[in-house]
Image (cartoon, rainbow, N blue to C red; front, side, top):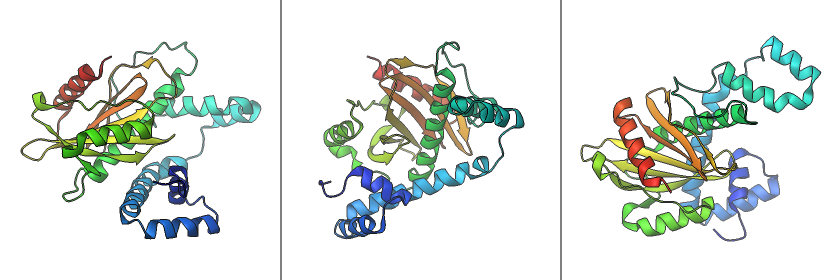
Length: 257
């Protein structure tokens, strides 16, 4: 991508936040770059999935007690909303233990953000794992280029785990939009066509660790955790919980510093 149109421009384009003049410039830029146009189309599909997944929750009124608290103490609004997401079950699925110190500032918000990551990972998996012709942007044959490219975009050195012990090989990967910047998705496949995706994002709060948690979004199971610089989510609609846990443990062991 050149300096004329940045990744931030593309994110704003997908979200409908560009003014008409800048939008016209991006339209022209994309018209001359079919590959980028296809990537933006994928961003739109994923963005639509996320909006659809959250629409019901966003239309719900705040619980009465929480609403009163926000009126009385506006500065607590962000913290109260984060706590409400956890308390009222917006964090998806039945979860395993989260090894966080409950008295540490920001623990509730961290749990909430981790659950959002899991949901986005599930949506991304559901969006791209059924693809036959274009499941990834860069194939496994160009793994070196793939890792260098995604590492540069995320701002952290990535490693691609080997899942041969789980009977899976790398298909490739792609760049996706995240809540706070680009994220990476790596796809793996077994000889009989079962697929697993690894979703990786850079963590704003460094040196944070959490234990595995499990969530299920429709038919997609997700194990997710945070380990220092990155958040990780392993997703699959083909593997059961126990199988997916074994894959997650295999990934974790290879990514340990």
